[in-house]
Length: 137
Figure 1: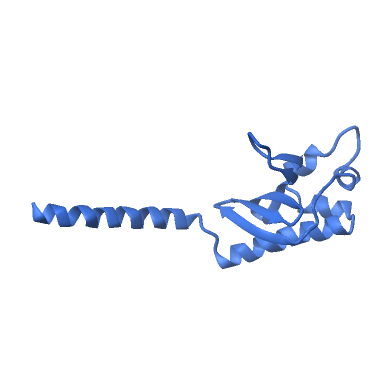
Figure 2: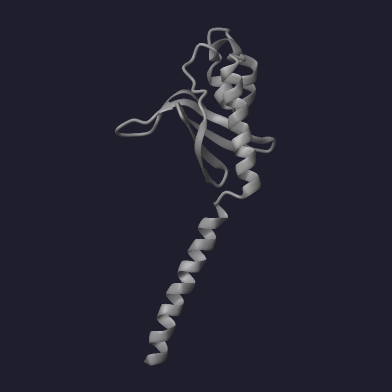
């Protein structure tokens, strides 16, 4: 019975280690974090310059398409939105998805074959429910 008592904690330690490795598989790697921050900075810089084509180029295809209405293209629509252009204050990554906090906005991203793209921006947290975003896929 003493052997079983020793094995149970060892199994628990092993289980915790396995869970940590699984969670770490979704953890951000240094290169990914750099690429993510660069994608956010590209988006923010385009917003600061009121560069509609630049902002739309940083958006995921579905997010850019969501702005096209009434014959107006994304670039014409996006410059009239209230999108943040502040400093990056933090990022969180969950596998192929990420969230970036700016000093004046929250931006969501997804990893595409060509790199990170913004899937939602101009986002405000809601008391009950998801964020309310100016741009979203």
